[in-house]
Amino acid sequence: MPTPGRKQSDDGPSLPKVERPEKPNPLAERLKKIDPDQAKKYRQRSGQ
Amino acid sequence: MLCGLETEYGLWIEGRGPAEQLEDAAEVVRSYPNPCFVGWDNRFESPRSDLRGFVAKTLSVDPVDAQYDVGRQTPLLDIRADRVLPSGARLYNDHGHPEYATGEGDHSSVTLDDMHGEEVVLAAARAFMTQTGRQVKVYKNNTDFHGASYGTHESYLVPREVPVETLMRSVVPMLVARQILTGAGKVGFEHGTPCDFQISQRAEFFSVLASVDTLYQRPIFNTRDEPHADPTRWMRLHVISGDANRMPSCTRRKLYLVQRAIDCAITDSGPSWDLEDPIKSMESVSKDKNHEFVVETKQGPTTAYEIIESYLDESDLGDECRRLLKAVRSSFELLSRQVDWAAKKKLLELSDAPDPRAVDLAYSDLDPEVSLYQALVDFGEVDSADVRVSSNQSRSFARGLAVQKFSGDLLSVGWRKIVFRQGEVELFPDGVYSEQLSEISDVVEFMRALEGVPRA
Image 1 (tube, rainbow over the protein chains, first blue to last red):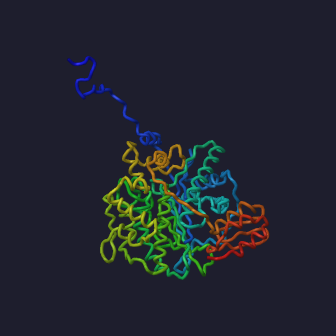
Image 2: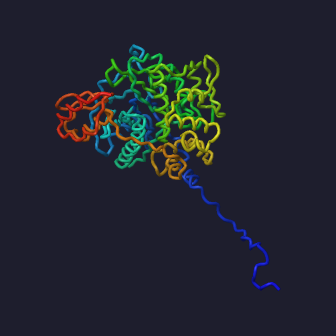
Image 3: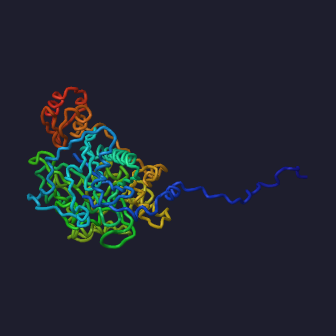
């Protein structure tokens, strides 16, 4: 007779499927901080 | 080999534009808040003298810029706003760009000084911002994406007896090829063949092989004869075709590679590449998205890879270049950690910016809070250059000491001379200026010590 409460096999409980937010890519976060229009308004005199 | 590096920084000021840029850049330089000496000696400047033995009648001017200057009254010297720094470097306004010229030294000390220059220019810009309340951006790049380019120039001291033709034959193939290991990368094109991305900021802005011009109709090989030293013994190779690099390792590599080409010219022992069309090759290498980097020579086609390999020596930097040449072909990840153009390309692949030029510009932004180059450093995506210098015993050390210790006695300071109230002293490019000079507290004794320095 199996002992109550004991495991019957090596298969453990599976992790519940939970929607986890993806780990943010810090580089992608920095990319979002740039001014998207800066290059359009950037004008210089010619140098040497 | 004594060398130096000058970078003209891009300057953007809220509510201002190119028409006001000459005055604005001067004000930014004047705002520099830290100790420095005001009084540059420009007696030995000769931008129209040509290494080939003549003096050009005029220098070309960009016709767009010329429109901004119609009716301008301010004398050029007033607007340069020169500052000499305690390091021996020079900060000034060059055609509307704050320019930092490092002191002279070997490629490692110049690389470190170039990094210091970023801090100097940023400090000036921030002080200007505080004074005026205007937002200011400074960019270490070479283009505004609208057709204007500004330079990053290298200087190398070369014995006068080296024939100019030999020097040009050795250096030009390297200038064309080295961009694959030193280019800063650029989104889009402004001249010539269309492309989405190219490896060099500067490559498409050259239209002649050799001349003294730098502002317009620029040459790959600049022949300005302005040695800033005894002209009977020395000439200065003034390279204007390189990019402004954020990675110190790229800066050092850029200097090393040209020094190798010069060494080959001095010893007349280098490879012999006779390029069919250097101007065309400069652009085609920069824009080759397949990374084949074919260069046509009069003996047949070769590649930028083969050209660079043919100049390398057995030094650590030579080995670094060999590793990176392999990486261009097989390991983009390694390349992106050590070469600016590849790092920029990696950022572009991560970005969904509607205008990718914004990513390009932000890479070169000196403000560490928003700089994308700095972001790569912060997140460990760039390999440290590990630049070490034991001590810089070049004449820039003596110039810096004069500013630090005897500024009250100074009348003017230049690359070649220091004028004290008590007299004038020559700085020798081959002088060995030791640490012991810093122990001298009397100005006349200091002048005597400078006059008597040993020569290498």
